[in-house]
Length: 168
Image 1: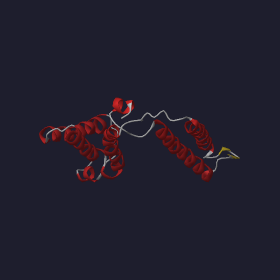
Image 2: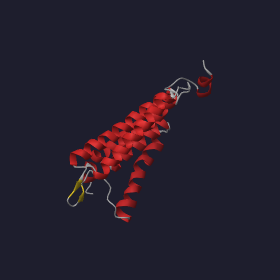
Image 3: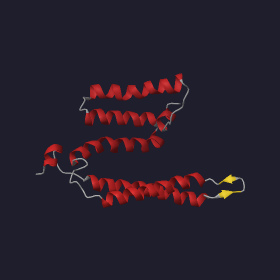
Image 4: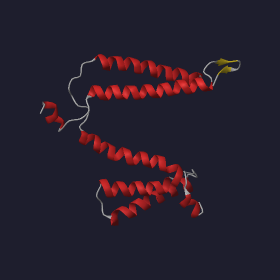
């Protein structure tokens, strides 16, 4: 077992591999911006810049920066260090995956119901709290947010079918 494995507690993806992967992902975002900008017009019209003018150059700068980073990462010899252990990545994904599902669920079930589910899942699964502790907090926190935003600040937040059923 290498010294690095003793320091981090296990194996995982290398720094170089993660750097190359993230660079390719960011380059894809830049490519999508460039292609989308070209579809709506990235030139200069009679009344000024077209809708895709600025996004085109932002996407192009992302592509150029990604190419530089990719060349640098490709030409750098790997140091053999791991970016993170698989256990560490699993712990991070145990927060990122439910949070991502929460964000995508908000337009369909509303922010309040999604928040109740998210808080209950986190408290039960990660915090290992008992239902007697979890349920009052999971239900009470979105109610407090509802009162603060909807009643005091008069800022409507995304609602779903449950809020419509309750008349909000």
